[in-house]
Length: 465
Image 1 (cartoon, rainbow, N blue to C red):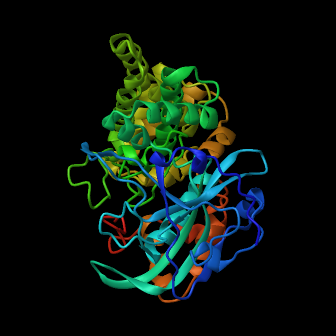
Image 2: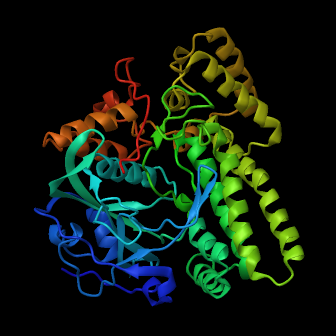
């Protein structure tokens, strides 16, 4: 097979990583292969031996990346790729640099006594949800392949079928990548990383504070996009916050069914730090940690702190502007202004009070079906009258482009995983087909639009580590 590697991260000093090969597995079997993504990367063959970790392809320079990070607000001085190995990078058909990484490929020096493996459920979950996010137009890592390993991994539930995910990303550079060198006082390494990040992701940025400003803008747009589709990341630690502005690490993530601002799914988020409505605040907090790291590059730290503070303090307004643009379009306003915030928030308040389904309510706005999502139908009718008066024109095209008809619902993901464990990949393939065109209403997939019954509700999601 051919992978046209063009590696740059491996050319950085060895302080940034440890060269580590994947650990071979017993019986690699290709379960899923992303033809379109493979073509864009110039990857020629779905070779289970390569993407299961049994054979290192020519040109690869496998390594585990080093980083640290704040986990639920507490700083961990060293993390790193504990179950992932970067094979290398390619330039895709647009000339953009893309990482190719194996996730679940065995232990590394950063595994912290973990087995370095992944079981089938989280691998297929990330495959489906990351590709769904891509189809929704939200910046994200992507899935190239899923390989079943033929050997079990042991988790709390007992032995489970093992798997390896091949993840593709603009890079795997995180806020935590900067934090570890700042925390250690390794300023030369921090400067090298900053220059590398600017060249790779934000070439328009002028120095460290220009990089901070660019990353803040990317993260502001990203979190507003999450909010607009009811997505809850679930573990917004700084080691899961990318410099590129892509969504990364789909462990305990979920899409809301019934709308609630305080919705939490992650089993490890006991205090609701990463609840749906807290995500904008946490994005700002994460950028403050990046600022703290980058300030170490300046001799005049007082002046750098003042400038960095101004950049970070501007971020809430950036998020609100992006949020307003997206939610304005969802109700039919392409030019929503601050005077329209109350109109949007009044709808969300009514949705929360009545337990209205987030995706389906917005998808049905502008039709007679919309009021059926509410118990207080007179209240909704009064709100919809206000909306129509504000819009004044037919906005169905605007709303159709802003409101997906279908999302990867938790209960459908769980049913897909259960079937796959039993050897049936049909539900996976059907979900992938339906989610590839999320803004189209296709009657053959109407059952996938249905909210869960009380018995189907998934109350918690798990990391899978």
